[in-house]
Image 1 (cartoon, one colour):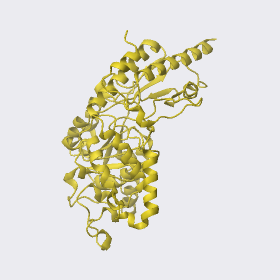
Image 2 (cartoon, one colour):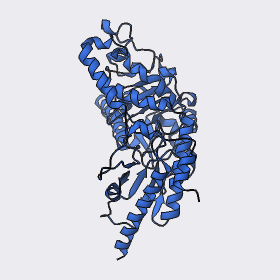
Image 3 (cartoon, helix red, strand yellow):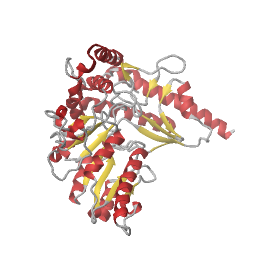
Image 4 (cartoon, helix red, strand yellow):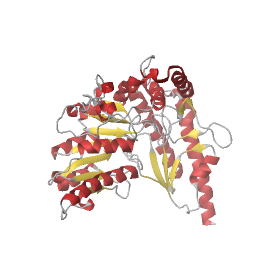
Length: 433
């Protein structure tokens, strides 16, 4: 049987671990880091880049907006080509700005335009922040309608159609088809996580987009767990809009500046309504401070304020790593690592785990989620693995493991399963005793 060491030696995609400052475990040694689906490790060049930008601030002061190699007034443009490459878009269709949830609110103002006949939002039972934002978007409109029309019949429950995973954590295309068949003609917007944060399922975005458009619905994507993880071609798939954060697989730092994508067909669409701000105004007249808003004819018009330069610096440093990587080869490496993790779990712990991430490699990214069986409520697997030098994400008895090819090896995966097995079997013996 091929060993993990052999797999690492023979693999055509060698990890770039040396480019990252890998987290340290509690005993002082480098940790096995399998939690890039929550926060990616820091690129080693980050500190130097941030210090240099701080020095520019000290040297130039306000003149740094214009008088330097990378003037702050156009600094966000440095990230556009890299982001466009990662999501399969045109550079003018993306912009680094805001945070994921703030960008969700800004884009929903434009794309959730309920009418008497189309007012529903079809969405996944996904990440709570998305749910909070969507509910508040609907509530804001309902409050306005009820203020004008006291007997307006629409309620929040009428407007939200939530799709939940089945008992195995899976959402099939047939489920989407059934929901759209029942509600599509009264739906304004379909909203999905391209990769589900909990189960790791990677949805068939092009088919879902075509399906939504067949019923006359707009479709938007949360790419938080997709960007930097799975192949995306948003422009050719004709996705209407998308938002993402940059602190997970992109490794741009805690609370990193996020981004959004708008299909170019909407840049000059007179029906589009925006929440406007001065950084989305025509660059030629922005500093003349005209009274009327003149939106830039790109995704940049969805900006409202000048972005944090240090946040952009961190993003650009992180994206520089992806710029030197063949994304298809990275995808293939991630598939090999995830398949190896799945194989080991089934071989070593089949009776003790229930994997909820799809087994089909095309339906998942570099994440495997599984439930631990037969363990009591006092069994803290995250703490036990941390004590063994392993960092991953747990939610009660649910474990989410993200073997990311940029910095994860087959040996990392092997050690993880060995340590997991030790802890699970020890707990199982204690429970039986």
